[in-house]
Amino acid sequence: MLNFRKSIVKRFDFVLFITVILLCIYGLVMIASATKSFETSRFIKVQTISMILGIGCIIILVIMDYRILGKLYIPIYVFCNILLVAVLIFGTGDESWGARSWLSIGGFRFQPSEIVKIGLIISISKFIDNNKNDINNLWTLLKILLFAGVPIFLIYKQPDLGTALVFVFFIIIMLFIAGLNIKYFVYTIIAGVISLPILWFSLKRYQKNRILNFLNPQNDTSNTGYQAWQSKIAVGSGKILGRGLFNGVQTQFGFIPEKQTDLIFAVIGEELGLVGGLVLIVLFGIMMYRLVKIARNTTDLFGSLMVTGITAMLFFHIWENIGMTIGLMPITGIPLPFISYGGTFLLVNMISIGIALSVGVHKEGLNF
Image (cartoon, rainbow, N blue to C red):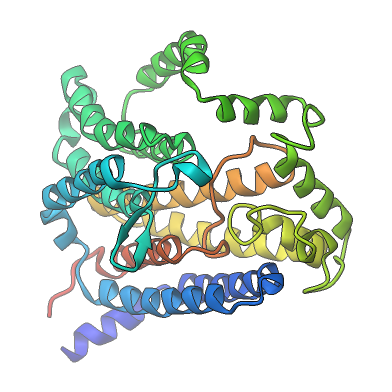
């Protein structure tokens, strides 16, 4: 037992863990500023509790061998799909956000798609690992795509295109790392280009407006383009050093919608300026580097694919959220990992880090 503990401490990635804690603290400070005008401490309380629970989950996952998750991949997959079906039947949120994405059980309200992200990463990693020798066989590939496609379709039907795209992105990256022949990616690109007109006509009106406003930012700044316009004003007004914490005009006077969730980077840009934004990006960069290092140093394909999926998932969130805030990407409901308010979102992100740390610790096998 003593040798086991020493091995955990020796292999534990303290840099990754500390970086994630710093990101959580950064997020708590910015949520406090974003919600100051609401005159309630509920947001800070929820985020702090989620952070503490997340740290507990990380500790448990690091002690536990990650291979146990692989043995449970079918029950995890089934549970994820049951959650998504329940959202379609009992879910709420469409009256406020245009998507039925939330479930309420008792007094607890959560977004199942966030839980499903990590569940599908675990499941698809094991499914690919089980079929790694035949991954370039067409029928094997179709089985993998069907396995991954069911939860993606259920999320798309909410409708939540932004979250569905997160799933598509990390699955593509995982298949690439698993050794899928490049020709399949070329076929996918060609098929995607051909199907663009069909995809366009299948979009909801608000989804089309987001794309049109991205292409022409001044198209409708008082209505459908309001979020993007106000966000860029906030970031631009922060300049180099920002207006000061709790002193942002756009933030404190309510010009930025969803400022504690989707557009929290606009709060950072306005109040902490370019310097505050760069500090955050550096922290994200360190986190991503450590995750990539764990994935590369893991010889077990299942563990490597899980960390790859987690890295790709977090990267997509970071890229899309910051990009939409500064006008480089269309507006979507994609929050910023460890920074945006959301108890379920923060807890799932910390669980994903716990899994990655567990892979780093147990990658060569540890015995109790």
